[in-house]
Length: 243
Image (cartoon, rainbow, N blue to C red):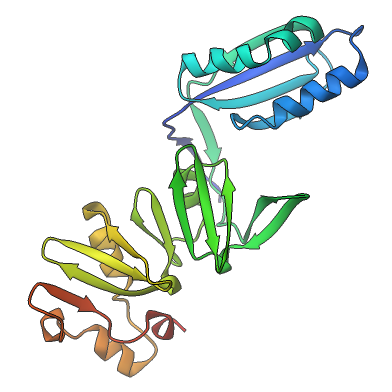
């Protein structure tokens, strides 16, 4: 049974309702709509009939950013809009759902379906997230919190508040004096935040159906051949363990 939860948010959401002037030129209204919907702050929109013609939800940092959004379209709002009202979201209630199987990402001529299982890495970039899949990557206007909800927690690990990695993309874990580092399949290193070390180690020390792999995973870290200042968790390729 689905649950309804209060969704945490570190940004301000605004619901902007617009009623267009019936005397306004159709092309001008259409161009304004498209420009508004393409704005990076806009996350949802619906066309409607009744009291308003267009309802837009925007994510902004603060009131200054909100007024900046209005300033960007001051001429259009004055010349094309007959009535406008804004409401500020206090709390959002979201119905929890099963993990997504695929994510639709923007491409040059529209949208493209990307299977979640093929995603290697997700990194935060300001108000956006970047998905890495092999040699390709896509920038989405989304949050890391939402990405963690979409992706299966058994397949994807949060290494840092700004980084989520597919377990199969992690080659090994290295302990360097006072912190842990994940060595990724492309050779890059990602430091693991202290708050995520326990969960990461626990996730990669689960029982395996491969006897020799399970035995290796239970071997104490002190048996590693790494240098005294560097302990390595690499019983074998993690991707082989998880097959």
